[in-house]
Length: 145
Image 1 (tube, one colour):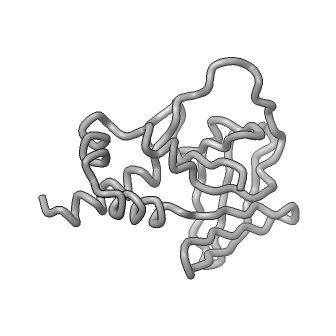
Image 2: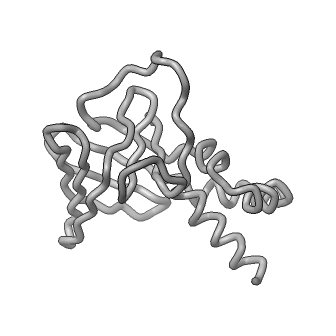
């Protein structure tokens, strides 16, 4: 496996990493996703398998910074139902809808592509979503921006 392929794999895995739930009840639940969110880099690193983490830890600081920059993605959920995802110089827009029971977040991009995400955690400190139920390391973990 080439070095750059490994880097790309780690970036992709880190992008969809998850962080185990924090213990205790200090986090306040939210009723909406409205707000500004960003991918949690720390959650991505903590979600890596032992092999991925060892590879990551052995990278140079420059390569680690490249990974951090590659996963700097901002999400904006506007109160009027509009959605923006900003990554570097690219902005994807569309609409979002949270189900009445706050268990399903549907994002419909302007090109018509729809993404249905299971809401696994929605607090003031974290928004965790995934494509299936149960906590998975493939969850996307966001924190307030």
